[in-house]
Length: 153
Image (cartoon, rainbow, N blue to C red):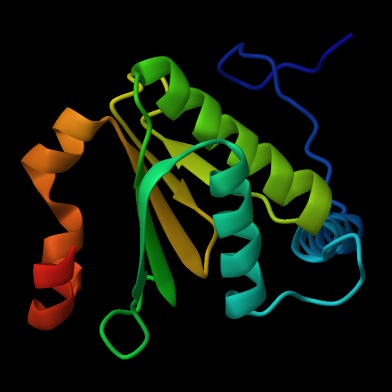
């Protein structure tokens, strides 16, 4: 029988196992951060892996932007396009899956359900996958590129 308090409500027994909780959180954080190869990927190696995956999935107009010294959101930003909402979603899902299985990186996805603009946050690198019309509207890379580089893009 569950004990009742003076107000007549049931009381729940509280169990605390801080050591187990701390070890479990630390172990899962280590498992999530460590790639299968054992060594942590540098930002440049991760960027190369991302660019290869985007190329394999036929992403169009891929632009990489070096954010080091410009922003604290990451080291690089990658902007690319897919021809349709289906391709934008497929590119983003495949990239997240490849990063997880091949490199042990868990990426966060935003906007996947709409398929117009998907943001993939890997920590060091932020990837934006757009439909061409949406990319033209926001012109995200022009905000981050230097004026000379923006003129080329």
